[in-house]
Structures are given as C-alpha cells and as structure tokens.
Amino acid sequence: MTYRGRFAPSPTGPLHFGSLVSALASWLDARAQCGAWLVRVEDIDGPRTVPGAAEDILATLERFGMRADEAPVWQSQRIARYQQALEQLKSTGLVYPCGCTRKEIADSLLNAHARNTTLAYPGTCRKGLHGKPARAWRLRVPDGDAAVITFDDRWQGPQTQNLATEVGDFVLRRADDQWAYQLAVVVDDADAGITHIVRGADLMDSTARQIYLQRCLGVATPAYLHVPVVTNEHGEKLSKQNGATALDSDKPLEALGAAARHLGLELGSEPPATLEQFYSVATAAWAKRMNLRASA
Image (cartoon, rainbow, N blue to C red):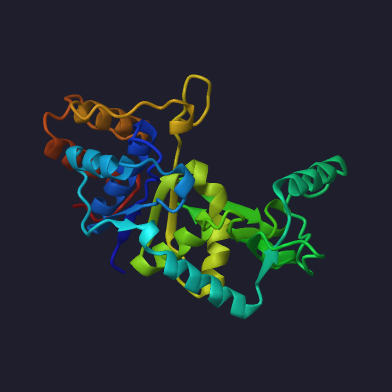
C-alpha cells in the first residue's frame, strides 16, 4: 500500500502553533514512510472562512519548508461530490430530514440529562417531521452492538465509541445549507486515496462517526493517529477563537523545534541550523518514536 497522508487546515485565520504541530506530525509521518503528503483547504464553512486566510496558510507552510506533493484541494470546489454522496446515502434509507431547532435539541438533551439517560440526539425526526419543515439531513446510526465502533489509534491506543448512546443520528447537511464536516472529510479522504490520517486529538471524537460513514459509503478506512493538542495557559485548546497568534515566518526553525518537542521528538543536543537539517533529523526521530521501518 502506497502511503498517502494529508494536512487539512480550516482558513478561519492564519496558521498558529497548534496547527503547526498537526501539520508537522502529518508531514513527518508521510516522509518517514516514503509517502505522499497532500494539503486540503477546508473552506466548506462559509460563515467562518476568512478571505485570504487560505492563501496565507499555504504560503506559511511553504516558508516553513512543508511543500505538498500535489496541488491543494479546496472543499468549496467539491460541492457536487458532497451532494452525490448524500444522494447515495438517501438511496439506502439511512438518511432522513430533521426539523429540530437547536433549542429543541438542547431542551431534549437537558431533559435526558435530568433522567440520567443518553445525551445523544434522541432521534426525534426518525419517524417523520410531524408537521415541521425540514432543516437538516441526518444519518441514522445503528442500535445495539452494531453501534459500537472501535479503532486502534497509532498514538492514543484502542478507542471505542457507542454511536447510539454517545452521539445519536448525526448531521450531514446543516440547517444553514452548509455541508457538515463529517461528510465532507470522509468524501474528500476517499477521493484522494488517503491511507493515513494524522491530526489533533481534539478531532478524535469525530473518528467513530467517520468510520461508520465510510462503511455506509463503501470506502476504505484509513489508519488514524491523533497527536496531543496544544493548550494555552488556561488549559484550553490553542485556537484562533481563543486568541492564538500567527506564526512568525521569519523564525521557522524556532517554531518547528518547539513543535517537535511537543511531539516528544529527540533532535539531539545541537539545534538544526537549516530547514533541511531539521527535517532530516526530525524525520528520523519520528520514525524512531513511531517504530517505523522505512525512513526517508
């Protein structure tokens, strides 16, 4: 199997240190296994997309020495593929329209919490809209043992999630007509032939849903690796929403060294003097940490 990995930033602002860690981990994993590294711009969420941010992210990756092996893919140019996938799922009977508002869902979850039962979407519209207009499209998850999804994360170890009790039927197309992350990422990864996904641990909760969706669409499931997220002084995930600052493109080695340390890589006593030297040492360190046989 030829390794194909990817980094998939959302253009909601400039590249920051937390995103750099994920980008570096995915780049090193691909290079350590002599594979291809792709970049996908996840600009599917129109209201959150910042004009010019995608171009800035791509330019920053270039200045930091991470060059994609193929032309970047833009989710905003793939709307027809998401619609095609939704129609495929509709034909199986697994997808249904949902008329619930956010308040109605929140109220039902609060009531469920009070009863000490599931906090998942309760399936209100599974058997019909009951006179309400359709707002979103949901994917029906199985019940019983079939709802339990397990996978072996290459960093975090064995993982298990019960879709029925922990998630419920999840959205594929939102009420605002935006395509949901779960559907878009599964379709994109399948079309690109992605074999390995390396990303932050904050996205691990989505993995079981994506594996189930892959099965429903009849596409392959990649190997997953979720690296520890970077947090701020308050213990919150470092993100653009809580004030993460843009990377200093004039000091790539300093930021890359810090990212490597966050990933637990041993780069030696002498700091690398060039980007080429850094990536050579860091790739070998990643291969050693991950017990990989191949080395670029």
